[in-house]
Amino acid sequence: MAVKSETNDLSSEMELDAYRRLFPLRFHERHLSESIRPDGRPLGKARDTTIVLGAVASANGSALVKIGCTTMLAAIKMEVMTPTAEAPDEGCVALEFHMPPICSPLVRPGRPADVAPVISKQLSDTISSSGMIDLKELCLVSGKAAWMAYLDIYCLDADGALFDAALLSAAAAFSHLQIPVVSLNDDGRIVLVPEDNAGSMKEKEPVNKEKIKLKMKNVPFALTCILHKNYILADPTSEEESIMETFLTVVLDSSSRLVSLNKPGGPGLAQTSMIQDCIKLTEQRAKELERILNESISDMEVE
Image (cartoon, rainbow, N blue to C red; front, side, top):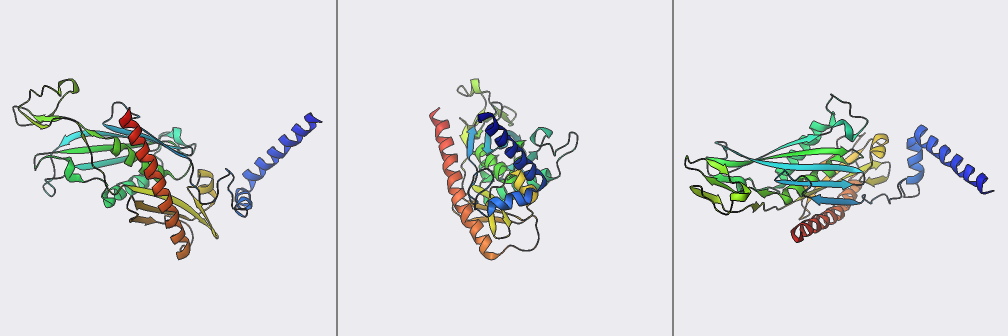
């Protein structure tokens, strides 16, 4: 009897899996009607999130972020540049978002993912408009030297809500960033001071005597929602994204200020009430992500 029961269970699982593959939308809608999702989450709940700071030892700042299975690795390298004439007292942030073939079977070797430049532009605009980074803090000598922060974000596993995870990884990497020690040499040029020589400071004039933590404010947090009929699905998986067309991404900062509202695709306009519900969900999610980020920073400082 036990063998027969196990055989029936296996047969049922195979039938369910076949139904899911052949009629994915019907499969998901059956769950939605019961206010549950195939992975067991309530409709408005995001996936479990973890942040690991200092994931890349050779970078000046780095972080590994996981939202469910979606995984992002962000790393920052600092280089000295000559500031522009239009902004002589400001540094710059240069961002690139990468999707190597390892992240998804949809990304083919030798071909950049179509969505990568879109997410890269969206990230750059969000970081700039949020005011998270005060570019004046990246100035070394007015009109002569400033920091260029090269931020590279690598998607290691693309399982939905890529922008949300990438933005969180960027914020986490900047929170971990330590600006290197530099000084003026005899030629009046800014030079990096090796860590083992930072205490002696034999150069002509120190610019900063120790590594500096970047002061961050108005940290932006994002939540992508799927709007399907009268349902709102927060933090969708790649499977959910592939079968439902209407998306809405809300970005709020740590003061609950609306940074951006983006509806990249889908038929028609979203109802005002649904947009308001998405904003409320984002407020809750932003508080949760801020807590996780602060806990990661505290753990790093203790170590």
